Amino acid sequence: MKEMTYAEAIRAAMSEEMRRDPDVIFMGEDIGLYGGAFGVSVGMFEEFGPDRVRDTPISEAVIAGAAAGAAVTGMRPIAELMFMDFSTIAMDSLVNQAAKMRYMFGGKAKVPMVLRCPAGSGTGAAAQHSQSLEAWFCHVPGLKVVTPSTPADAKGLLKAAIRDDNPVVFVEQKLLYRQKGMVPEEDDFILEIGKADIKREGSDVTVVVYGRMLQRALEAAEIVAKEGIDVEVVDPMTLVPLDKETIINSVKKTGRAIVVNEAVKTGGYAGEIAAVIAESDAFDYLDAPVLRLAGKDVPIPYNPDLEKAVVPSVNEIADAIRTVMNR
Image (cartoon, rainbow, N blue to C red):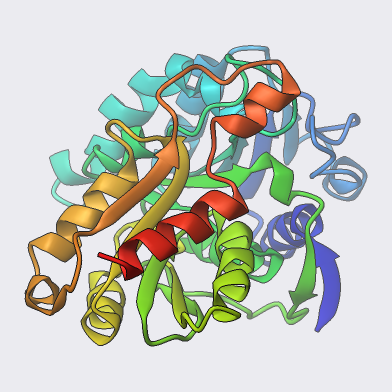
């Protein structure tokens, strides 16, 4: 084990896979000599050279299209969008081509590409550079959507995504890049896509949470623990395919459920998870309605105080836990 930041864990995963497999390439805006907008790929250009670490034009349509084309013709591209917001420009290649080709060709075509998407608020980047759009991609059959919350999860899941024969949207919350944690160093450290993790065991209420909100949920759990409330925290880690069994079993154990995400509430993935719980046999075990806690339905403000106010805080998560416990 070695202490790494989230960004370093992502770099380690990409570098290890590129050393292992010469078909793995990396492309995106300013990822070469500059080392990426968030410094994730510093040093990779020097090790792998311009043929395998390729700076692209400022065109997300080109990045996604080139990645899809390279993938279907035998390469394993990792493509980085500088901000997830710009996936709007990459949608046709991703949604209408990459997500559909394996199905349309009866499994004869494979599309082993990873689209890395720095997402979320908290950096003062305002409305056009701070969105959490993972629910869009979860709605598209043929795409896998991965949302690691810790450095170790980021490394293990990215290596799995690179080796997967299907297109994977890999969501990285930008404020996590400097978060530190212990990460296995071995090259064969792989986490299973589609498997949730119980980050904290408890008996009174289940909090299902992913991304940056995980740490806040864990902090809230410690706050309410002093009040005698025992919180179980479940991190899906992968949104598609979703590990429904782990979530349902947790809710059956605790009898209460809260789903937290940073993305806006309307149409957010928290609603999908809440529906999964409500439609399962966990419904019969509920002692209170499932509660969603999500971002407010507004563009992300530039003002730092307003920016903080539009996504769930530690205190808001703690209050939601108290609310569910008192119903």
